[in-house]
Length: 291
Image (cartoon, rainbow, N blue to C red; front, side, top):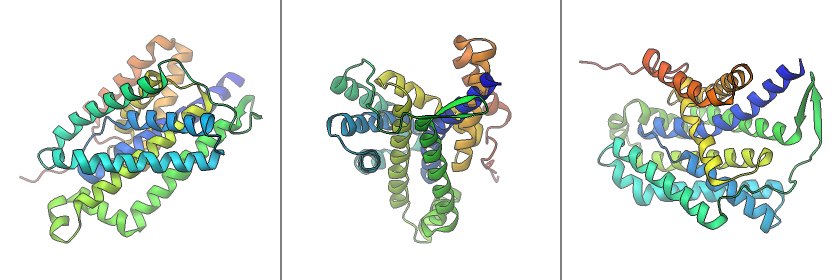
């Protein structure tokens, strides 16, 4: 029982991290039909900014989280305004390709600044652990899951009940018509990029609470958010979290049942299967093309 309970606990925590990164994919796809492969880079940036604030600056945990999310969100929005807004004006596919370059730049920059050796945070939340159904659950893991659930809940409510959310839905539905009705697609995209950067930064923080961080390792974690969002459905914020937990569950089952060497294969094989048989994912909307 303890093995199963521990696997479930690990699934929820890892899935929450995938989900936080995947939320950025969903927001950007809703706002501009762009698949941003820079989400792992923003996660990486968030993890190391948080490390600097706590390790070097001695900032308390809540303040360090707030500063990190704000800085990365602002940086993400600035990158969009200065670079990607001009690329997106030509073609969404070109923007998606350009985000790969941005991810590489961020990974290289962090590697130059901090090196490639794993760095561990000092204790920023209680090291105490709780026992639940035979599983040992560290407080850091509880904090990570709670942050992910809270952020996704707030974003779902925002998208459903606020003017910003309604305008974002209008742009996602028909960008041309939305512009004619007075909705600024550029402003919506800027906000979406800021939110995507902030949630990716929070994913980096959550990861750093439970594991040592290094540029390659964190970027690889960010990469798994892509299969997660395909499972949950492109454009679905709630689906990003569900897809993240599902993917983490599959990975843990494969790791326990077959071996760690098979985890990557199964993760991306499931993604390909969904793209082939259900490209809209579990919660995404299938696009209807009128001839």
